[in-house]
Structures are given as structure tokens and as C-alpha cells.
Image (cartoon, rainbow, N blue to C red):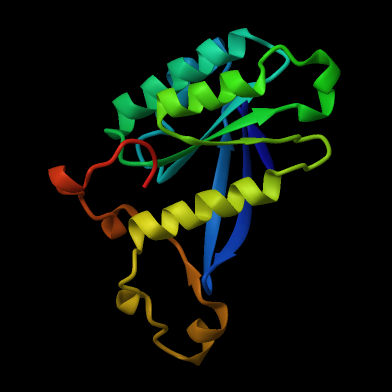
Length: 178
């Protein structure tokens, strides 16, 4: 765990279909004072997690803003999920589940209601993002990722880099993630 300049960095290994992805999470907090700085993180992102606070109606508009920034700075070539956080504070909820479904449909993203405090749905949402990343960047052709030796076979860790990203053809571009 690292913290600098208002950004938190966490790393987590997630295994999907026998492939282990090392996922780096750069939490830029979404605060206005970090907007300029945060935009630079989009350039090499493969996936984006948009988080809104169900106890704060303004966070819905901020989420739309950040999705627009994501599309502008990545060309939309990233997997995206929406996390509606603080479901542990149901009695303070102002953003209703129907609103979230409509927002997710409008933004073309999958959404999960989560609680960072008690971990509700956090693992499931990260697995969904990892599956989307595998589908988008590895697909069904795993031959280029076959292990070269026994040690690599044991670890089976995949680190995506920009050279692994295939450019989608105009006809294959879809709304939303992957």
C-alpha cells in the first residue's frame, strides 16, 4: 500500500481461468483538486473502476464526469465497472437501486453495490473486472501466453502491457466494457 500526492496504490493478484492478473488500483479519490493529476492515470489504464457514494446524490454527477474523462483520455478502450459504495449505510441511502440500474445502462457499464467497510461484493466486482479484462485483452487465443518453462507454468502470472492490446475493428466496437 502506497500513499502519495493524494493517490493510493494497491496491488492485488486475481486468478481467472488459470491466469493470474496483477491488478494495480490507483485510487485518485475523484476530488476536484486532483482532477488534472488524475487524468494522467487514464492513459495506460486497461480497466477503470468508477465509484459512487449511495449516500451522496452529487456523486452520481461526478461519476458521469469521470466516465467522460475516461473515454476522452483512453478513447474508450478500457473495461469499466461502476461500484455503488456504502451499502452498509442503507439507512442513509439517497441513490436508489433503480437509479443505479438506469445510470449503469446509460453509461454502458456493469454495476455492483458494495461496501468497502465490510467487503460486501468487493471480491465479486474485482473478479468481474478481471474476467472482462481477460475477455478483452486475451480472448480465447491463449497460445501467446503459454508458459515457456516449468517455473512460468507454476506461476502463470499475466501482466498486461500496451503491446498486448488489440485494436478493435469498427464493427466489433460495443457499448460498455468488453
